[in-house]
Image: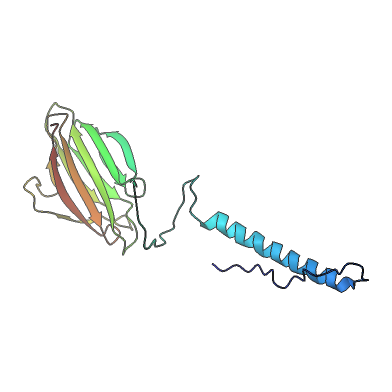
Length: 197
């Protein structure tokens, strides 16, 4: 953004020492200074309202960041959710969700995806409670809160949109859900069953 602050029009040779100076020159300089202070206030407030800061969370409002080199970045995770009931996980709150101690058949609904034309993805980490294998059914919500069209990756672990969690509590089933049209179509990938080494 180009600045509207103009310093070149200030007459820095005015007033002239030892001369009876016309007061118009003072008024001109003060008017230019006042105008610049007004512009500076506007520009500073714009920076305060619209720039990324390092001391607070910043909302980029879906603006595009280009030619960026990312180093040591993270994605937001959601603390463990107890799997004793149906759950909704939203892309708007985290990119990785852990649902553990699953003790019944539950449905996990993915929602809150970004606008059409933006890819949004969520990883869902599933762990059982060790008592029995339970099925996790996946569902999705599109921007109008209607059910999503679901597509699975063809992995044998799927039965329709259902995967089973292991009876071993240390085992984790990871599923990735993503969309490019706000959740109208949601793609489900069975990433795998991960066991302690």
